[in-house]
Length: 174
Image 1 (cartoon, rainbow, N blue to C red):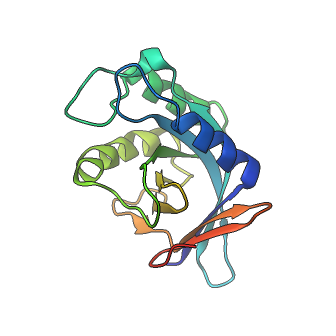
Image 2: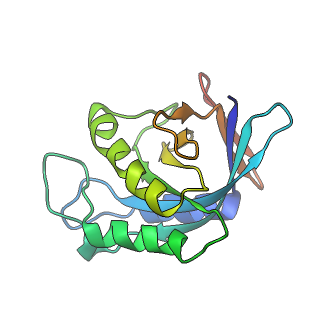
């Protein structure tokens, strides 16, 4: 299945600005971005990201075995945000920034830790798609879990709509 993720240039700029800020002890920042799914003409899925939530400093857990670990308060907030938004069918996407240029992907730690959040997101947003988005300085990658799905679909592209337009296709950085 083809999956495209789109967000506005203003939302992308807000996300990058927030995630680039230093944290008192975490090596990186984490946030949540919310979006809604639509259909593409070829039976694919279009994910429109609509809003971002920055994790407050006091909701990080000091754990130097990972770049950043957030506590249950941050996760509870995100799940309540979509649960109370019913019937909007808004999905939750865990988001963070890798500090390099070019195509990015999940590190071994990302692959081990982050997908464990998805069943909790699905439990409160059964009619939505949820996922993970990792940005670099000039690229982005996404993984989407369809409604009640147990395996992610790697997004074909992440597009930043605005001026300038950025299209981050898998396999080639632009």
